[in-house]
Image 1 (cartoon, rainbow, N blue to C red):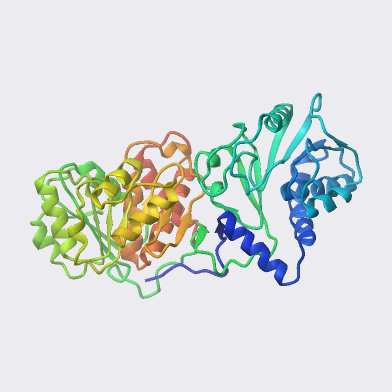
Image 2 (image 1 turned 90 degrees about the horizontal axis):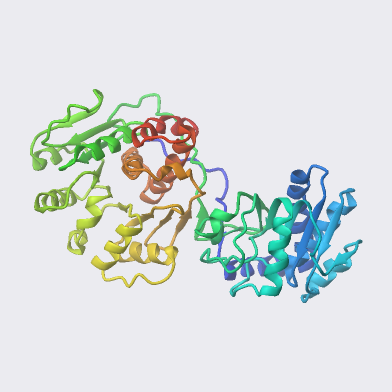
Length: 471
């Protein structure tokens, strides 16, 4: 079975403390803070230069090293002939920022009143902010954002708490956010992520090898081997239940996601099922006895009554790689996991996450990252915490952060499509964490290709195009 191909380390996503440690490692290796600031500032200036396209730029500089980056950006653009203005309500406080200020050959205004232009560059505060922005600094930030046509945030928008994505300042929508050195959690977490516009990264040489959190990147897959057949590509069995529509959505997406054989185990008739979907109407015990099954999907349309619980128990009794979604999450009990040894993927949205926390005695404290990691550790499963800010967490603490996907995904049935993709990737041979990350990426790409106002079935049919984008 073909698996993902990687030719480089994935982009790390770092906490504030991890970013400081990464920068210190670069300093210990011989690159001083001034050099790092020059690399970061000039790299960010390239993006500002591109977006400005010869138009005027105003840079708001704060007292810390993010402000220092701003002075470097301003001088880089000024030296190229752009009309640049710098506003600094507070003098630089750090040695590196003071040195960068000394390197800027131009006037610095302390008051933003009356200043307008085309491009506004926010370098007031960076990733270290952990408290509300004071009113005397929030005012010039808001004023300059409103008086410019295009807004760029450097590293993070000012007023964003880096590790959790909380908003600590004015709610400003940026067109572009240029991350410095590495991605931060807030680049992918709501509500902050919704304010950032497009995301770009400036490399300063951070070593990604020790990071446990990464941005979910496009998988690089390969076509089936020349001698492949349907069973070698993987047999996925979907356990049906009381409501057939959800299982059919999962099956449709699964058939386009890599598995060579998708079978729906259901004792109900399915007159609307696609002709190329295999239906097994035997009793569930008999249907599950097929030794060729490589993975299971349980939950979409399962129901929540005693019959559904029996079907879930029978499926878990086979101890195969399994994706558990929807109704299956609502009725999962800890004792069902006691004898499992095969990989398990859970795909809860916010409400289902709360139900699972209660079932497994988790207090539900912290942000989304902490909650997903706690559930993964308690269950031994890979957790796909769905929503506008989807992430994947493993029991070992590995985390995958997804880029913002189309808001048109906020329609009924799209979660069933995601579950079908993840289960198909499991059957096709991907490891559980990789399968979950691949599914999240496929899901978002299918939504992009589907355009606006799609239905869940239209999304499922676009999974084929998403798969093609990985080849």
